[in-house]
Image 1 (cartoon, rainbow over the protein chains, first blue to last red):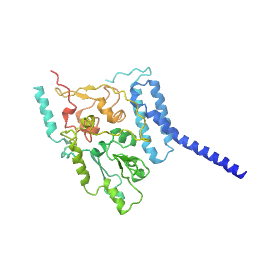
Image 2 (image 1 turned 60 degrees about the vertical axis):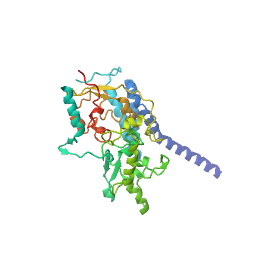
Image 3 (image 1 turned 90 degrees about the vertical axis):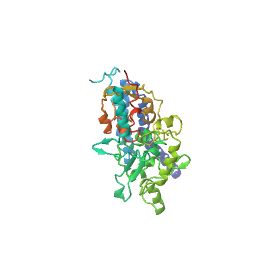
Image 4 (image 1 turned 45 degrees about the horizontal axis):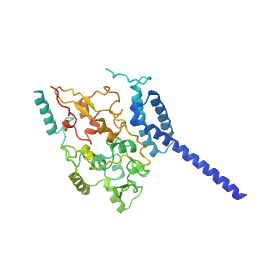
Length: 103
Length: 265
């Protein structure tokens, strides 16, 4: 009986720890999605850019709860990706056409 | 007449040391070009400043690996690296962790909470008390096999990579994002303000190979053609092209490397 209880508790503990791992890894997966698209950013549509920006903002928020060492490196990285997408999106009309340069 | 004038300017630019901010600066020896003295916290901790030589690192790693993936700023001393960051495995310790290998050797570890007298010898590899003679010799032997260039490190890095003289690592597992093949925009012809001055041939391919997109866009240049209008003065102040070409990449007195288009007329 006692042994069964321990087994159940161990299983619960394992499940809980795997939850923690996956929660903390979520932003890493999302960051990979966000920053893995920068090399083709110039050919993305306005909507695709907006989705990546939203995802990047989620990553940025999630990073706030990480330890300082992780935060300082990855915040900067995600910011660079966001800056690029925002810059491209700013030069585009929502219909995907690029605005002419300002005179 | 125009050609003579432009040639004169190029000649002057190539032979005279740039006198910026009213101060005549000595031309750095090739070994020192790209050197950064990092001294945010070292002296407070009782250590000499870190002497960082770009040539040594750029012969092994791409620009974006350090400046994007690892997070080093492109402005000297603005990253504000602390020993505790290295102890926590970021910045220098991403590679300098006593585990990572380069050319069959373990990369020495960066920073520790405590160190013995023997381990202090590792500290002074970066926190240099005096000029690193070994590194000087290493540079001399490294340069021997490299295509020669007049300025900067005396190495034509672009040609060296093209000829396979070195291969820059561009990815660290667990640190770098996956990089899909890049759709690189075509080369651009940039008009110079000075009449008769050859146009600049800007190659996206050459720049993106080491820097990707984010190293320049939008921090240094807006992505939209024509939105970034800049002068040579601004470049000489370290803005736009000057962010790299005043400090690490071939220097600005190597005029013809950029102003390379045939003169019209």
